[in-house]
View 1 (spheres, rainbow, N blue to C red):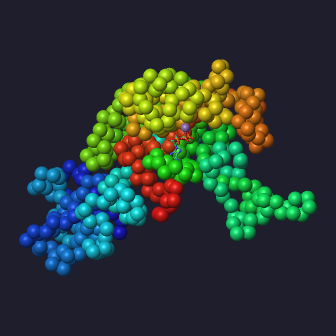
View 2 (view 1 turned 90 degrees about the vertical axis):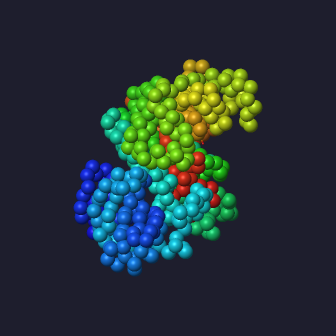
Length: 470
Ligand code: ATP
Ligand code: MN
Protein backbone atom coordinates (compact mmCIF):
# COMPACT_ATOMS: atom_id res chain seq x y z
CA UNK A 1 0.00 0.00 0.00
CA UNK A 2 1.60 3.21 -1.09
CA UNK A 3 -0.45 6.26 -1.72
CA UNK A 4 0.64 8.19 -4.77
CA UNK A 5 -2.51 10.31 -4.99
CA UNK A 6 -2.11 12.86 -2.26
CA UNK A 7 -5.12 15.07 -1.69
CA UNK A 8 -3.00 18.02 -2.77
CA UNK A 9 -2.38 16.35 -6.12
CA UNK A 10 -5.98 15.27 -6.52
CA UNK A 11 -7.25 18.78 -5.89
CA UNK A 12 -4.95 20.02 -8.62
CA UNK A 13 -6.42 17.67 -11.23
CA UNK A 14 -8.10 19.52 -14.06
CA UNK A 15 -10.56 16.85 -15.08
CA UNK A 16 -12.70 14.06 -13.68
CA UNK A 17 -11.01 10.70 -13.07
CA UNK A 18 -12.23 7.22 -12.27
CA UNK A 19 -10.84 4.57 -9.95
CA UNK A 20 -8.90 6.68 -7.47
CA UNK A 21 -7.79 5.44 -4.07
CA UNK A 22 -7.33 8.05 -1.39
CA UNK A 23 -6.22 7.85 2.20
CA UNK A 24 -6.61 10.31 5.00
CA UNK A 25 -8.09 11.23 8.34
CA UNK A 26 -11.68 12.35 8.69
CA UNK A 27 -12.10 15.93 9.75
CA UNK A 28 -15.89 16.12 9.74
CA UNK A 29 -18.89 14.08 8.70
CA UNK A 30 -22.38 15.20 7.79
CA UNK A 31 -25.10 12.60 7.50
CA UNK A 32 -28.32 12.91 5.59
CA UNK A 33 -31.00 10.37 4.76
CA UNK A 34 -29.53 8.60 1.78
CA UNK A 35 -25.89 9.63 1.86
CA UNK A 36 -23.10 11.15 3.94
CA UNK A 37 -20.35 13.67 3.30
CA UNK A 38 -16.94 13.38 4.83
CA UNK A 39 -14.16 15.93 4.71
CA UNK A 40 -10.88 14.09 4.35
CA UNK A 41 -7.43 15.50 5.11
CA UNK A 42 -4.10 13.74 4.59
CA UNK A 43 -1.71 16.50 5.65
CA UNK A 44 -0.49 17.23 2.12
CA UNK A 45 -2.50 20.44 2.03
CA UNK A 46 -4.75 22.44 4.29
CA UNK A 47 -7.63 21.73 1.89
CA UNK A 48 -9.92 18.82 2.60
CA UNK A 49 -11.22 16.49 -0.05
CA UNK A 50 -14.95 16.03 0.07
CA UNK A 51 -16.18 12.45 -0.20
CA UNK A 52 -19.77 11.54 -0.93
CA UNK A 53 -20.88 8.16 0.30
CA UNK A 54 -24.26 6.99 -0.90
CA UNK A 55 -26.14 4.46 1.16
CA UNK A 56 -25.78 2.10 -1.79
CA UNK A 57 -22.07 1.71 -1.01
CA UNK A 58 -21.50 -1.87 0.28
CA UNK A 59 -21.64 -2.10 4.07
CA UNK A 60 -22.88 1.49 4.40
CA UNK A 61 -25.01 1.00 7.47
CA UNK A 62 -22.23 -0.79 9.38
CA UNK A 63 -19.44 1.54 8.40
CA UNK A 64 -21.10 4.89 8.74
CA UNK A 65 -21.06 5.00 12.54
CA UNK A 66 -17.30 4.43 12.60
CA UNK A 67 -16.61 7.28 10.17
CA UNK A 68 -15.94 9.74 12.97
CA UNK A 69 -13.62 12.71 13.29
CA UNK A 70 -10.03 11.51 13.51
CA UNK A 71 -10.61 8.05 12.05
CA UNK A 72 -8.32 7.01 9.20
CA UNK A 73 -9.87 5.63 6.02
CA UNK A 74 -9.20 4.26 2.59
CA UNK A 75 -11.65 5.45 -0.03
CA UNK A 76 -11.97 4.13 -3.56
CA UNK A 77 -14.08 6.14 -5.92
CA UNK A 78 -14.38 8.53 -8.82
CA UNK A 79 -13.38 12.14 -8.92
CA UNK A 80 -16.38 14.07 -10.18
CA UNK A 81 -17.24 17.73 -10.60
CA UNK A 82 -18.76 18.96 -7.38
CA UNK A 83 -22.33 20.20 -7.14
CA UNK A 84 -21.54 22.41 -4.17
CA UNK A 85 -19.82 25.73 -4.73
CA UNK A 86 -16.96 25.29 -2.26
CA UNK A 87 -14.85 22.85 -4.20
CA UNK A 88 -14.25 22.01 -7.83
CA UNK A 89 -14.13 18.26 -7.39
CA UNK A 90 -15.26 15.67 -4.93
CA UNK A 91 -14.99 11.92 -4.67
CA UNK A 92 -18.01 9.77 -5.26
CA UNK A 93 -17.14 6.75 -3.13
CA UNK A 94 -17.49 3.16 -4.32
CA UNK A 95 -16.01 1.69 -1.20
CA UNK A 96 -14.91 3.02 2.17
CA UNK A 97 -12.73 1.13 4.59
CA UNK A 98 -11.91 2.31 8.09
CA UNK A 99 -8.21 1.70 8.82
CA UNK A 100 -8.20 3.03 12.35
CA UNK A 101 -11.11 4.20 14.44
CA UNK A 102 -11.06 7.28 16.71
CA UNK A 103 -13.63 7.10 19.46
CA UNK A 104 -15.64 10.34 19.62
CA UNK A 105 -15.67 10.03 23.41
CA UNK A 106 -11.90 10.00 23.63
CA UNK A 107 -10.37 11.71 20.58
CA UNK A 108 -9.68 15.28 21.70
CA UNK A 109 -9.66 17.02 18.33
CA UNK A 110 -13.38 17.29 17.77
CA UNK A 111 -15.00 20.12 15.89
CA UNK A 112 -14.72 22.44 18.88
CA UNK A 113 -11.73 24.82 18.60
CA UNK A 114 -9.00 24.28 21.14
CA UNK A 115 -6.63 26.90 22.46
CA UNK A 116 -3.00 26.77 21.34
CA UNK A 117 -2.05 26.37 25.01
CA UNK A 118 -4.15 23.24 25.28
CA UNK A 119 -2.77 21.88 22.01
CA UNK A 120 0.76 22.13 23.47
CA UNK A 121 -0.34 19.52 26.01
CA UNK A 122 -1.20 17.09 23.24
CA UNK A 123 1.94 17.49 21.17
CA UNK A 124 1.42 14.05 19.61
CA UNK A 125 -1.92 15.06 18.10
CA UNK A 126 -1.59 18.78 17.49
CA UNK A 127 0.06 18.33 14.06
CA UNK A 128 -3.34 17.00 12.97
CA UNK A 129 -4.83 20.45 13.45
CA UNK A 130 -4.98 22.93 10.58
CA UNK A 131 -2.85 25.48 12.40
CA UNK A 132 0.08 23.31 13.41
CA UNK A 133 0.09 21.35 10.16
CA UNK A 134 0.20 24.62 8.23
CA UNK A 135 3.10 25.81 10.39
CA UNK A 136 4.97 22.59 9.68
CA UNK A 137 4.43 22.86 5.93
CA UNK A 138 5.67 26.46 6.02
CA UNK A 139 8.74 25.33 7.99
CA UNK A 140 9.40 22.69 5.38
CA UNK A 141 9.12 25.14 2.49
CA UNK A 142 11.32 27.65 4.29
CA UNK A 143 14.03 25.00 4.87
CA UNK A 144 14.06 24.20 1.20
CA UNK A 145 14.23 27.89 0.30
CA UNK A 146 17.12 28.44 2.70
CA UNK A 147 19.23 25.66 1.25
CA UNK A 148 18.38 26.77 -2.28
CA UNK A 149 19.32 30.36 -1.54
CA UNK A 150 22.78 29.43 -0.32
CA UNK A 151 23.41 26.63 -2.77
CA UNK A 152 22.63 28.92 -5.69
CA UNK A 153 25.26 31.32 -4.39
CA UNK A 154 28.08 28.84 -3.92
CA UNK A 155 27.87 28.45 -0.14
CA UNK A 156 28.92 25.13 1.36
CA UNK A 157 26.60 23.59 3.91
CA UNK A 158 28.67 22.80 7.02
CA UNK A 159 27.68 20.78 10.07
CA UNK A 160 29.10 22.23 13.25
CA UNK A 161 29.15 20.22 16.47
CA UNK A 162 26.19 20.01 18.79
CA UNK A 163 28.42 19.08 21.72
CA UNK A 164 31.16 21.56 22.31
CA UNK A 165 34.05 21.29 24.69
CA UNK A 166 35.49 24.68 23.93
CA UNK A 167 34.91 27.01 26.79
CA UNK A 168 34.62 30.06 24.61
CA UNK A 169 31.09 29.84 23.34
CA UNK A 170 29.29 32.38 25.47
CA UNK A 171 29.15 31.00 28.97
CA UNK A 172 25.98 31.62 30.96
CA UNK A 173 23.27 30.09 28.84
CA UNK A 174 25.02 26.83 28.08
CA UNK A 175 23.52 23.46 28.95
CA UNK A 176 26.13 21.18 30.41
CA UNK A 177 26.75 17.71 28.97
CA UNK A 178 28.16 15.21 31.41
CA UNK A 179 28.27 11.53 32.27
CA UNK A 180 29.39 12.24 35.82
CA UNK A 181 26.92 10.89 38.32
CA UNK A 182 25.42 13.91 40.01
CA UNK A 183 25.19 12.02 43.29
CA UNK A 184 28.87 11.12 43.17
CA UNK A 185 30.65 14.13 41.75
CA UNK A 186 34.42 13.71 41.88
CA UNK A 187 36.03 16.70 43.53
CA UNK A 188 39.65 17.69 43.09
CA UNK A 189 41.86 17.06 46.14
CA UNK A 190 44.31 19.72 47.24
CA UNK A 191 48.02 19.10 48.00
CA UNK A 192 47.16 17.87 51.49
CA UNK A 193 44.76 15.31 50.04
CA UNK A 194 41.81 17.35 51.23
CA UNK A 195 38.77 17.42 48.97
CA UNK A 196 38.10 20.85 47.44
CA UNK A 197 34.80 21.86 45.92
CA UNK A 198 36.33 22.06 42.43
CA UNK A 199 34.90 19.37 40.17
CA UNK A 200 37.42 17.03 38.56
CA UNK A 201 36.36 17.19 34.92
CA UNK A 202 39.26 15.00 33.86
CA UNK A 203 36.99 12.17 35.08
CA UNK A 204 34.14 13.34 32.83
CA UNK A 205 33.38 11.80 29.43
CA UNK A 206 35.40 14.27 27.36
CA UNK A 207 38.05 14.80 30.01
CA UNK A 208 36.88 18.38 30.32
CA UNK A 209 33.76 20.39 30.81
CA UNK A 210 31.41 20.15 27.83
CA UNK A 211 28.09 21.62 26.81
CA UNK A 212 25.53 21.97 24.04
CA UNK A 213 26.36 24.57 21.42
CA UNK A 214 24.86 28.05 21.71
CA UNK A 215 26.00 28.95 18.18
CA UNK A 216 28.02 27.38 15.39
CA UNK A 217 29.63 30.67 14.50
CA UNK A 218 33.14 30.16 15.81
CA UNK A 219 33.42 26.82 14.04
CA UNK A 220 31.77 28.44 11.02
CA UNK A 221 34.62 30.93 10.92
CA UNK A 222 37.10 28.05 10.73
CA UNK A 223 35.29 26.75 7.69
CA UNK A 224 34.78 30.13 6.01
CA UNK A 225 38.48 30.84 6.24
CA UNK A 226 39.06 27.61 4.34
CA UNK A 227 36.09 27.22 1.99
CA UNK A 228 35.19 30.87 1.49
CA UNK A 229 31.43 30.85 1.89
CA UNK A 230 29.67 28.48 4.25
CA UNK A 231 26.45 28.19 6.16
CA UNK A 232 25.23 26.09 9.03
CA UNK A 233 21.64 25.14 9.71
CA UNK A 234 21.25 23.20 12.88
CA UNK A 235 19.89 23.01 16.41
CA UNK A 236 21.13 25.49 18.98
CA UNK A 237 20.64 25.34 22.73
CA UNK A 238 20.32 28.12 25.23
CA UNK A 239 19.28 27.76 28.83
CA UNK A 240 17.03 30.81 28.68
CA UNK A 241 15.28 31.17 31.98
CA UNK A 242 13.03 33.89 30.71
CA UNK A 243 9.57 32.77 29.77
CA UNK A 244 8.99 34.85 26.65
CA UNK A 245 7.08 34.22 23.43
CA UNK A 246 10.33 34.63 21.43
CA UNK A 247 12.76 32.31 23.20
CA UNK A 248 13.17 28.56 23.15
CA UNK A 249 15.76 26.43 24.90
CA UNK A 250 16.25 24.46 21.67
CA UNK A 251 15.92 26.33 18.41
CA UNK A 252 17.29 26.14 14.90
CA UNK A 253 19.71 28.68 13.60
CA UNK A 254 21.03 29.47 10.15
CA UNK A 255 24.50 30.94 10.24
CA UNK A 256 26.24 31.95 7.03
CA UNK A 257 29.86 33.05 7.28
CA UNK A 258 31.78 34.65 4.41
CA UNK A 259 35.46 35.24 3.92
CA UNK A 260 36.39 38.41 2.00
CA UNK A 261 33.26 40.12 3.17
CA UNK A 262 32.66 43.23 5.26
CA UNK A 263 29.67 44.52 7.20
CA UNK A 264 28.09 45.99 4.05
CA UNK A 265 28.30 42.75 2.09
CA UNK A 266 26.88 41.04 5.15
CA UNK A 267 23.89 43.38 5.34
CA UNK A 268 23.21 43.06 1.61
CA UNK A 269 23.23 39.27 1.83
CA UNK A 270 21.01 39.19 4.91
CA UNK A 271 18.44 41.46 3.31
CA UNK A 272 18.35 39.43 0.09
CA UNK A 273 18.13 36.27 2.15
CA UNK A 274 15.11 37.30 4.21
CA UNK A 275 13.32 38.61 1.11
CA UNK A 276 14.02 35.46 -0.82
CA UNK A 277 12.71 33.09 1.87
CA UNK A 278 9.57 35.16 2.43
CA UNK A 279 8.85 35.31 -1.34
CA UNK A 280 9.33 31.61 -1.77
CA UNK A 281 6.97 30.72 1.05
CA UNK A 282 4.36 33.19 -0.23
CA UNK A 283 4.48 31.46 -3.57
CA UNK A 284 4.62 27.85 -2.39
CA UNK A 285 2.37 27.96 0.67
CA UNK A 286 -0.43 30.19 -0.52
CA UNK A 287 -3.21 28.12 1.03
CA UNK A 288 -1.48 27.94 4.38
CA UNK A 289 -0.79 31.67 4.45
CA UNK A 290 -4.42 32.37 3.51
CA UNK A 291 -5.37 30.27 6.49
CA UNK A 292 -3.08 32.25 8.83
CA UNK A 293 -4.47 35.48 7.45
CA UNK A 294 -8.02 34.36 8.09
CA UNK A 295 -7.55 32.83 11.54
CA UNK A 296 -4.35 34.12 13.10
CA UNK A 297 -3.16 37.46 11.77
CA UNK A 298 -5.40 39.55 9.47
CA UNK A 299 -2.54 41.82 8.31
CA UNK A 300 -0.22 38.97 7.50
CA UNK A 301 -0.07 39.36 3.73
CA UNK A 302 0.52 43.10 3.83
CA UNK A 303 3.19 42.64 6.51
CA UNK A 304 4.97 40.15 4.30
CA UNK A 305 4.60 42.34 1.24
CA UNK A 306 6.28 45.18 3.15
CA UNK A 307 9.36 43.00 3.64
CA UNK A 308 9.62 42.05 0.00
CA UNK A 309 8.84 45.39 -1.56
CA UNK A 310 10.91 47.78 0.56
CA UNK A 311 14.57 48.37 1.03
CA UNK A 312 15.37 47.67 4.68
CA UNK A 313 16.11 50.87 6.57
CA UNK A 314 19.72 51.11 7.74
CA UNK A 315 20.46 53.15 10.84
CA UNK A 316 23.15 53.22 13.49
CA UNK A 317 22.63 52.34 17.10
CA UNK A 318 23.29 56.01 17.93
CA UNK A 319 20.48 57.04 15.53
CA UNK A 320 18.21 54.47 17.15
CA UNK A 321 18.88 55.82 20.62
CA UNK A 322 18.22 59.39 19.42
CA UNK A 323 14.93 58.33 17.86
CA UNK A 324 13.86 56.59 21.05
CA UNK A 325 14.85 59.53 23.23
CA UNK A 326 12.99 62.00 21.03
CA UNK A 327 9.91 59.78 20.78
CA UNK A 328 8.50 60.98 24.08
CA UNK A 329 7.38 57.42 24.75
CA UNK A 330 7.79 56.15 28.28
CA UNK A 331 9.43 52.77 27.84
CA UNK A 332 9.58 50.19 30.57
CA UNK A 333 13.38 50.12 30.18
CA UNK A 334 14.65 53.72 30.13
CA UNK A 335 16.73 54.64 27.08
CA UNK A 336 20.26 55.95 27.21
CA UNK A 337 23.31 55.54 24.94
CA UNK A 338 24.98 52.32 25.99
CA UNK A 339 21.93 50.24 26.90
CA UNK A 340 21.09 47.03 25.11
CA UNK A 341 17.99 47.63 22.99
CA UNK A 342 15.04 45.79 24.51
CA UNK A 343 12.32 44.22 22.46
CA UNK A 344 9.96 47.15 23.22
CA UNK A 345 12.56 49.53 21.73
CA UNK A 346 13.14 47.32 18.72
CA UNK A 347 9.42 47.06 18.06
CA UNK A 348 8.96 50.82 18.36
CA UNK A 349 11.64 51.44 15.76
CA UNK A 350 10.34 48.95 13.20
CA UNK A 351 6.61 49.11 13.87
CA UNK A 352 5.99 52.72 14.68
CA UNK A 353 8.85 54.67 13.11
CA UNK A 354 9.84 52.89 9.91
CA UNK A 355 7.00 50.37 9.47
CA UNK A 356 9.41 47.99 7.77
CA UNK A 357 12.51 45.96 8.63
CA UNK A 358 15.43 47.97 10.01
CA UNK A 359 19.11 47.08 10.14
CA UNK A 360 20.88 48.60 13.12
CA UNK A 361 24.68 48.84 13.06
CA UNK A 362 27.45 50.28 15.22
CA UNK A 363 26.49 49.03 18.68
CA UNK A 364 28.57 49.94 21.73
CA UNK A 365 31.27 47.32 22.16
CA UNK A 366 30.29 46.76 25.80
CA UNK A 367 26.98 45.16 24.89
CA UNK A 368 28.24 42.98 22.04
CA UNK A 369 30.44 39.92 21.78
CA UNK A 370 34.23 40.15 21.87
CA UNK A 371 34.71 38.96 18.29
CA UNK A 372 32.99 41.87 16.56
CA UNK A 373 35.25 44.23 14.62
CA UNK A 374 36.02 47.43 16.41
CA UNK A 375 35.21 50.66 14.56
CA UNK A 376 37.79 53.42 14.32
CA UNK A 377 36.02 55.35 17.08
CA UNK A 378 37.22 52.64 19.49
CA UNK A 379 33.73 52.67 21.05
CA UNK A 380 31.42 50.87 18.67
CA UNK A 381 31.60 47.58 16.80
CA UNK A 382 30.51 46.47 13.34
CA UNK A 383 27.49 44.59 14.54
CA UNK A 384 24.29 44.45 12.56
CA UNK A 385 20.94 43.37 13.93
CA UNK A 386 17.90 43.05 11.72
CA UNK A 387 14.69 44.05 13.42
CA UNK A 388 11.23 43.32 12.04
CA UNK A 389 7.82 44.64 13.03
CA UNK A 390 5.98 42.60 15.67
CA UNK A 391 9.02 40.58 16.75
CA UNK A 392 12.07 42.79 17.01
CA UNK A 393 15.38 41.05 16.38
CA UNK A 394 15.43 38.12 14.00
CA UNK A 395 19.03 38.36 12.84
CA UNK A 396 22.19 39.17 14.73
CA UNK A 397 25.45 39.44 12.86
CA UNK A 398 28.71 41.30 12.45
CA UNK A 399 31.95 41.75 10.65
CA UNK A 400 34.47 39.83 12.75
CA UNK A 401 37.65 41.24 14.21
CA UNK A 402 40.37 40.01 11.85
CA UNK A 403 43.31 41.74 13.50
CA UNK A 404 45.25 39.47 15.85
CA UNK A 405 46.37 42.14 18.32
CA UNK A 406 43.01 43.87 18.48
CA UNK A 407 41.26 40.57 19.07
CA UNK A 408 43.68 39.67 21.88
CA UNK A 409 43.02 43.04 23.45
CA UNK A 410 39.24 42.56 23.24
CA UNK A 411 39.47 39.08 24.77
CA UNK A 412 41.40 40.53 27.72
CA UNK A 413 39.05 43.48 28.00
CA UNK A 414 36.10 41.11 28.24
CA UNK A 415 37.78 39.24 31.07
CA UNK A 416 38.21 36.11 28.97
CA UNK A 417 41.13 33.76 28.80
CA UNK A 418 43.41 34.00 25.74
CA UNK A 419 44.44 30.33 25.99
CA UNK A 420 40.83 29.20 25.67
CA UNK A 421 40.73 30.90 22.28
CA UNK A 422 44.04 29.70 20.93
CA UNK A 423 42.60 28.18 17.76
CA UNK A 424 40.25 31.09 17.15
CA UNK A 425 43.18 33.49 17.45
CA UNK A 426 45.27 31.43 15.05
CA UNK A 427 42.69 32.08 12.33
CA UNK A 428 43.94 35.71 12.62
CA UNK A 429 47.56 34.65 12.71
CA UNK A 430 47.59 32.58 9.54
CA UNK A 431 46.17 34.17 6.41
CA UNK A 432 43.65 36.36 8.19
CA UNK A 433 40.94 37.88 6.00
CA UNK A 434 38.07 40.27 6.50
CA UNK A 435 35.04 38.12 7.15
CA UNK A 436 31.50 38.46 8.32
CA UNK A 437 28.36 36.50 9.01
CA UNK A 438 25.07 36.42 10.82
CA UNK A 439 22.66 34.16 12.67
CA UNK A 440 18.99 33.92 11.82
CA UNK A 441 16.73 32.27 14.35
CA UNK A 442 14.65 29.92 12.22
CA UNK A 443 11.64 29.89 14.56
CA UNK A 444 11.59 33.68 14.74
CA UNK A 445 11.44 33.74 10.96
CA UNK A 446 8.59 31.22 10.96
CA UNK A 447 6.77 33.31 13.57
CA UNK A 448 7.11 36.29 11.31
CA UNK A 449 5.97 34.45 8.18
CA UNK A 450 2.97 32.77 9.80
CA UNK A 451 1.91 35.51 12.20
CA UNK A 452 1.90 33.02 15.06
CA UNK A 453 2.23 34.73 18.43
CA UNK A 454 4.14 32.19 20.44
CA UNK A 455 7.42 30.62 19.36
CA UNK A 456 6.31 27.35 21.01
CA UNK A 457 3.70 26.94 18.29
CA UNK A 458 6.10 27.16 15.35
CA UNK A 459 8.28 24.17 16.24
CA UNK A 460 7.06 20.59 16.36
CA UNK A 461 8.49 19.78 19.78
CA UNK A 462 9.10 22.93 21.80
CA UNK A 463 11.73 22.89 24.52
CA UNK A 464 11.57 25.82 26.87
CA UNK A 465 12.01 26.60 30.56
CA UNK A 466 10.14 23.83 32.45
CA UNK A 467 8.78 22.46 29.18
CA UNK A 468 9.95 19.31 27.45
CA UNK A 469 6.85 17.16 27.28
CA UNK A 470 6.99 15.82 23.74
P1 ATP B 1 17.66 38.09 21.81
O1 ATP B 1 18.32 39.36 22.23
O2 ATP B 1 16.45 38.28 20.97
O3 ATP B 1 17.47 37.12 22.94
P2 ATP B 1 20.30 37.31 21.03
O4 ATP B 1 20.87 38.65 20.72
O5 ATP B 1 20.63 36.64 22.29
O6 ATP B 1 18.70 37.35 20.86
P3 ATP B 1 21.94 36.11 18.97
O7 ATP B 1 22.96 35.51 19.84
O8 ATP B 1 22.24 37.34 18.21
O9 ATP B 1 20.59 36.31 19.82
O10 ATP B 1 21.37 34.95 18.01
C1 ATP B 1 21.03 35.13 16.66
C2 ATP B 1 19.55 34.92 16.41
O11 ATP B 1 19.08 33.71 16.99
C3 ATP B 1 18.67 35.98 17.04
O12 ATP B 1 18.60 37.11 16.22
C4 ATP B 1 17.33 35.27 17.13
O13 ATP B 1 16.67 35.28 15.88
C5 ATP B 1 17.73 33.85 17.40
N1 ATP B 1 17.63 33.49 18.82
C6 ATP B 1 18.46 33.81 19.82
N2 ATP B 1 18.09 33.26 20.99
C7 ATP B 1 16.97 32.53 20.71
C8 ATP B 1 16.11 31.70 21.50
N3 ATP B 1 16.35 31.48 22.79
N4 ATP B 1 15.08 31.10 20.88
C9 ATP B 1 14.85 31.30 19.58
N5 ATP B 1 15.61 32.07 18.78
C10 ATP B 1 16.67 32.68 19.33
MN1 MN C 1 21.58 39.34 18.82
